[in-house]
Amino acid sequence: MSYDNVCKILAEKYPTDFARWLLAVEPRSIEVLKTELSIEPIRADSLTFLQTENRILHIEFQTITRSKTPISFRMLDYSVRLIRQYKVPVTQVVIFLQQTNDEIAFTEEYRSETTTHRYRVLRMWEQDSVQFLNNPALLPLAPLTQTNSPQGLLSQVAQSVARISDRETRQNIAAYTEILAGLKFEKNLIRQFLSEDIMQESVIYQDIFQKGEQKGELRLCLSLLNERFGEIDSSILERVQVFNKEQLEALARALFRMSSIADLVTWLDERASN
Image 1: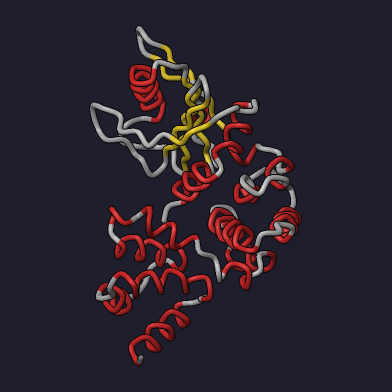
Image 2: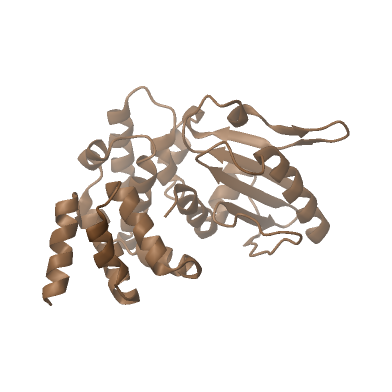
């Protein structure tokens, strides 16, 4: 599972909060657009299109700056397609999640001899943490905000998670937060502050599997394993590759209870003996 995919899930689950943040207005109505733009496929795993009563908000989440098609040109391309199809103004925001000095993260326009197209860029490491800490929908992004004290910020994040009254929401927000915090902080530091007993019962992996079915449950599960443990021995991967859908889903849900490759091997051995 990619970090930008987590952000896409959040934006589509809490569209009003994201629109309020990025447009600085209170939308009277909002809809998540499940659109297929013509001409060629788009990178749907990192894009979100939200339509208010008179505008489309196009959000693109990025952890890297370089791509086959430059970001600035993609913004021009998407803008033209959206305006052609929906005939309303489009606000575009590219959100860079991971700190970088690459000039692309500081570029807010596409320019050629005959065309200039502008869009907004937000760099999470420059954002004040307050609005993220006070809004559960935006809270998973809080660890990526500006701070001079990583421990202090993670402590505030943990306190904000603990204040969420609904149990299922608290579990899911904690899980999303741990994943995104991994872009900036070491795993051991994160776990000092984010309680694993809250996250281990989260149902977000079920949502992730549903959203990733078209890519294949196996590929998604292998991606989750790699993100959590890094490079994994081929003998372990071979054991996972023979799992059916239900077994893969069980493994994905169990990942939050694992802290090492040894835990993974133990879990696989227990499943094999059943």
